Amino acid sequence: MSARISRKKGWIITREAFDRMLAELHPDSERAGEQYEKIRQKLVKLFEWRGCAHADECADETFNRVAQKICEGTTIWTDDPYSYFHGVALNVLREYWRSAEQATKTLEDMAQVQGLPVDPEAILLRDMEQKEKERLLECLNQCLQNLPPESLHLITKYHLGEGAMDKARRKELAQSLGIPLNALRIRAYRIRAAIEECVRNCLEHGPAG
Image: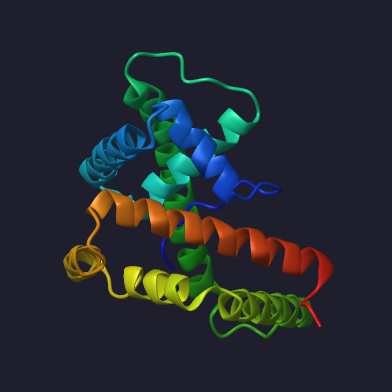
């Protein structure tokens, strides 16, 4: 079991929210993209230096939370936007370490109860969780099918692989599309935001007929 940072319940980033965050970085879209890339690189290094095993994921979560704050009326008033992101990132990092400690405790608890009689309530809970996972997968599959073919191709290629191999593939993908890497990241982020919003609506209202 690995430590993960959970999204804040009740709020899912949308493409509009992401674009508002970019506009807060700079009114010019190209300059905003450059700012986004610089800040993201610094955040990833920050999490890596602090021993975080999911640096990219935590960097994305930091952007999500800043986007939420902006949608709620917060403005990035400092001349150095990274300092604002840095403060939010430290909160994400603290939650990461708390979740890591909880994951370790869970593993220890599991080791202690091995061989004991099965708890019927635990079985019921597991079945409920399985049904939720099945609903989530059904909604995710539907939302992916509704994506334009070029968006589905991009997001699939973007998230193919892990670590250094993943980064190399993303550079190749950006080159094949004839766009800078930061522009590719922004496109992928917007597509992911659209997918998450679609999945949320599907879970709330059910899959489309």
